[in-house]
Image (cartoon, rainbow, N blue to C red):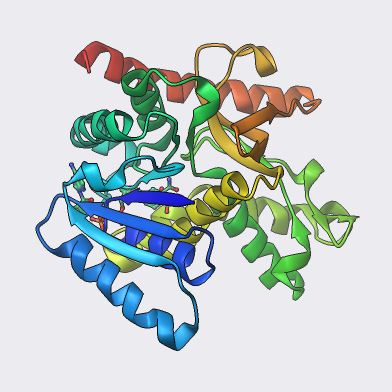
Length: 310
Ligand SMILES: NC(=O)c1ccc[n+]([C@@H]2O[C@H](COP(=O)([O-])OP(=O)(O)OC[C@H]3O[C@@H](n4cnc5c(N)ncnc54)[C@H](O)[C@@H]3O)[C@@H](O)[C@H]2O)c1
Ligand SMILES: O=C(O)C[C@H](O)C(=O)O
């Protein structure tokens, strides 16, 4: 199995590293536009193989997409990260151009690939890749929900003093401040979270989750990479190993949840064909309203892309 990761920056290199050391793919091709960066990081990951005992071959290239030919999955992380004071949406102009040109190359050499988008603003960059690739919606998806639920689960684990492994959660909507965590679908070892935490503390955790990306940008001056890189690798694993994992994933909705014109995070089944099923939860009125609010925001940013003619 061959996986290409475009963008050998913080997230891309982390994703390639996880794919390699967990032997998720046989071959990982890392691509970057900056001369030498992908070659250097791929070589570094390969030189770690005898220490950490894996045999995934990692190869880096500068903009040479012929080396990516026939990839099973391509992860696109190329693009600017935000700096303190910026929103993800502020990145749209630069990153739309990057995602478009990268997708053109990816599709030329790997017409059968599944594409996982990481670049921000996530929902709209997934739209961009979908427009450019003309692939069916099931093969072009965005990574955000795994990361956002991971943050939510990590905060809950800390508050409840339990293992993060035992916390299951669903989160929907756009990858931004309008994301919709769903306490009704959050459990701790099978126990509804609402039985273990008071409402005020849960609300505070939900608020922290919504701004979880921004919290890290403020601390580091750039955005996160360990959890995002691992989350993208987890999606790749589900596809490559045909695991039928249930994850929140950004996909174009086609009537699900009464929405047919927007890219949003929803729970799906991920397997060898990409998104194999969109799961429709029975949302209550309050949850539906939050999802529609999130749709409204993402639609506005999608319109910016549409008006730019990209
Ligand atoms: N979806 C998410 O949850 C999530 C999480 C973290 C980061 N992100 C986004 O992922 C993107 C990457 O973040 P990062 O921290 O890795 O940034 P980074 O600056 O560390 O890396 C980006 C890399 O992309 C490369 N690049 C730029 N244009 C390119 C092109 N045309 N072809 C190939 N490579 C190109 C750059 O040279 C750089 O190495 C950002 O847009 C960031 O906002 C999304
Ligand atoms: O916050 C960002 O800009 C990066 C990413 O979307 C994140 O949530 O970490």
